[in-house]
Length: 49
Image (tube, rainbow, N blue to C red):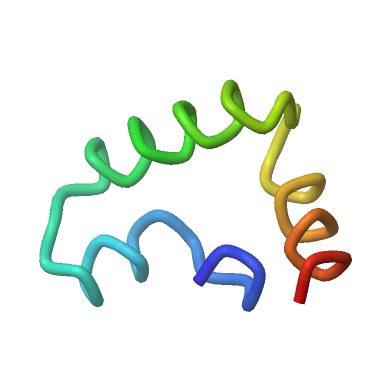
């Protein structure tokens, strides 16, 4: 959803979870992939997909 431009609020609504949970998951993903922000994550997915 991030690579399609989804923000935390829309992702949370779609997954029926809180925005805080989305933010926590994204922080974990950033850390594990050594990525700084959403833009870099979207670019990462663009290269992978």
